[in-house]
Image (cartoon, rainbow, N blue to C red):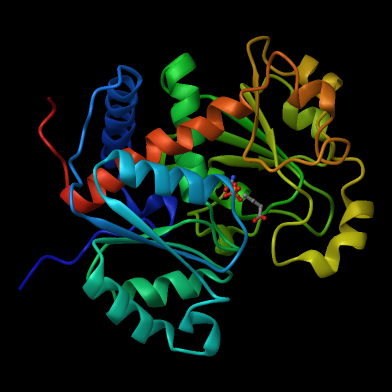
Length: 309
Ligand code: CP
Ligand code: NVA
């Protein structure tokens, strides 16, 4: 009997030690890549990427990353595969996981990736669901660590929608022991059950976003309307109007604070151009680090811990 595969469906699917191992590997893999040194630990391995929602960064970073590790990547979407024609997720998982070595899925409900993983012979990675976006937070925390060292004890201010990104920050805070200040409009408060966190020990809810930002080390936000919620767009534009990250918010944060955004961003909605295009913004580093962090994740999920070279 072969060992059950490891999955990355939510941030806490990996232990603190494993996440820190992945960060170490991401640095090693990134440095090697920057020196143009070939590293092909996944030679002959295949990643299948299933997209039920649009993507630029996730597709690009997984596809390029898998090739750079010596493997290949196959893109499937619901328009031109049987996935959009009602084939059960369980059947798709059986078939896809017999032909590939690792699977990445971007879809709607978290239960879809869970059902897939339960029927998969190979590791499954959440490339974004309505509830979580663990690969983005992996890259974002790696970006912080690269610049500043450990995130333990730091404060992240989350301004705006308590969406998949926010939920994942909350999980990461419990795992890596930092604090999240959440400021969202009335009716959009943190849902502890949805975020699947133990409680409120690592986050605090603020009515005024300025209070959330005060002294924070990372100020971060995301679109007001996530993919799949377009029908609520008009109401959301009204509800979130007072929750824009602007220069005043950055000025009350820690003097060394950075601004993060998973992208794509809407300048003039959740963030001003002054902030996202300003000197404290690290959004391009976050986007690049998707590549390096996910290469380390792929290596870990497919090969387990490798001896450090
Ligand atoms: N941040 C992120 O996941 O971007 P894409 O939607 O372009 O993949
Ligand atoms: N919260 C956004 C993130 C996009 C990368 C969404 O789900 O659409």
